[in-house]
Length: 237
Image (cartoon, rainbow, N blue to C red; front, side, top):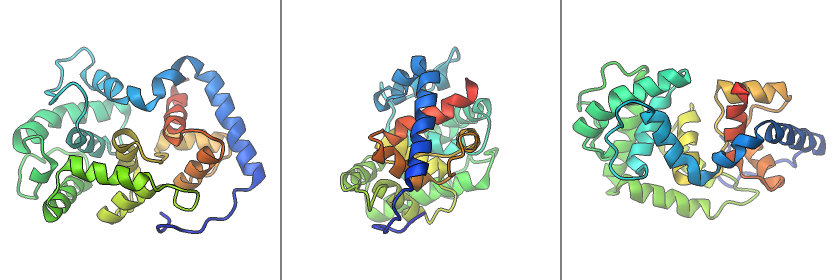
């Protein structure tokens, strides 16, 4: 991950043209779906995916709160889509709602209820965020508001300020789930890369480089969050 206000090399014209061509191809293929991939549709789509035909999760309100977003995106991990859904539904009620009282600040190492999480880093990530919020005397909503204020300062030399901040706060090396959180909850510039997205990038001979993908999205006047969703969806089409 680049440092704040890093100086970037100009994007090679051939690479930008390749990116533009790939996006146009995917947009044509996903023309019936692309309208549903806009930022404003994310909360409803997330709830529909997780609830499905099963008993709805015990959501706090009609949308998705910042605390819910952080918990859910952390539990995404590196699993299949069905695996992600199963794991989130399994832990949402007992761990997030009952043990943590819907508040990320409640996550501590001795909270209990973590047994069965697919990866140990999930507990560490939740506890890290809980400690950060408690140390700064803020809620998850206030933290997100600060990330959104930072994102207003985005520029060609500082394309991903919100993502950079949360990655720095966590000292994270694996950033995919943090990037998904910034994409879906904060609305910041990012381009989460998982195996599905990487498959499409390699197909179109594009670099597996989140910051560069964000820069190319912005250079072509595109929303990097929507493009990331398009690259993700393309694996099923």
